[in-house]
Image (cartoon, rainbow, N blue to C red; front, side, top):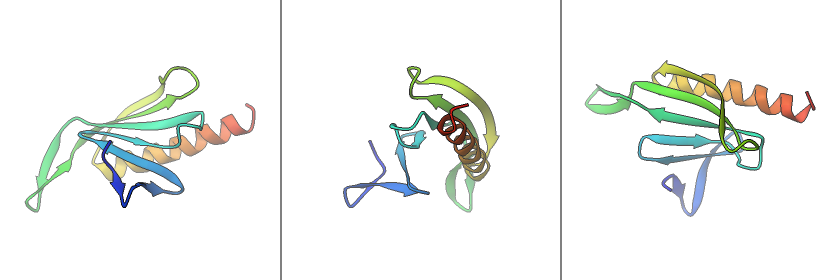
Length: 98
């Protein structure tokens, strides 16, 4: 898996962010849910290829990586921002016993 710096995975808000090709996982596999991002298309911006259409999914780690929620977003910022909000809500609900 890609995404290691000095032997450690990149982290955001205390959770690992791992990329391999056009697939990114965000979250701790010990939690009930993780995020999956699949970059479907890219576009050129200021001479660089950047993600364009991205599938965002919440996966249940307790149910064989079952898709719990999914959407398609434009741009990585929108996809990541939305996904992090979803993940925090789902993990909060799982932790509260609901």
